[in-house]
Image 1 (spheres, rainbow, N blue to C red):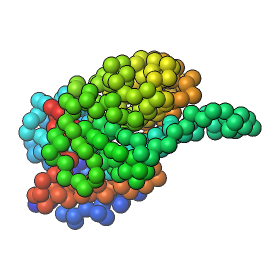
Image 2: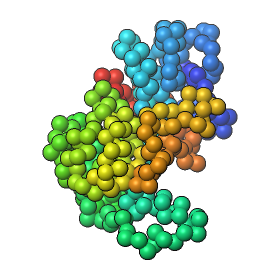
Image 3: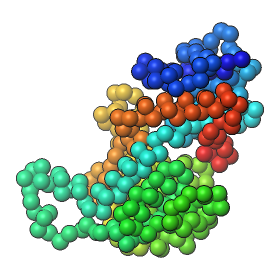
Image 4: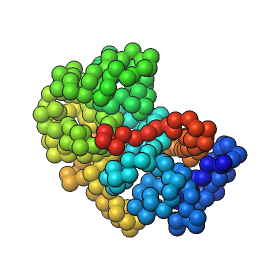
Length: 326
């Protein structure tokens, strides 16, 4: 019997064609924003399904969010449906890690203010006392050593940095990177060692406001912070104050506190309550870490691997622990 899969929406016809070419022949796909008749899907690919979608098909056993992370409203809803597992995709792990590494290099070398000056034919930054530092030999602390954190760790090691990391269950790490891994509850012991703090955590009740004034002040003066997890993991007021005072040399972020709520708002939505854009020691990126030209190709392969596993009665990859949030 074929596996029945329903997509709420497909990105494009090119994506659909590539995905279908990668799937087992006996997987049957339906597409549409209305609940199909008959509603017999076993897997629903929909990031924010309603109760009606979850209850329409008596055969539903899994919901797939086609990117990393799970929307908060979906997490809350799925708690009431323990018989339905939820999964996401990790196809953009290296993409996001590369963006995080780019933010780190930009922050360490003060590339943005020098770029902006030279665009105006102003060479004076070249002759001023440099604020740039060498990263080789310094210690990077990575919070969250999942797939993105591990990719970021590999890049830092390649640069000659020392890397330490935190993970909720450090004993589960099976990689080969030369990294010392500690449990999450050792964070305050590790912060004084962090010349660079790289945040690659999901946003959960445990991680919201995890990095506040106390944590930032525990870092060495002149250290760097980069956030590619979620904005509210770092207290924005503490971050702004530390950048203004110079306790933090610089920082960069791809994740924010406010996002446009409409297409019209895209040209005028402050990403935070504070004017981070006025700070020359802060690098801003509009939450584009996973977006590269190849991303839909990557998504198609990751989704095909997940659906083929389900079709072959293998464990479905990337199951989300709703309690943990990832």
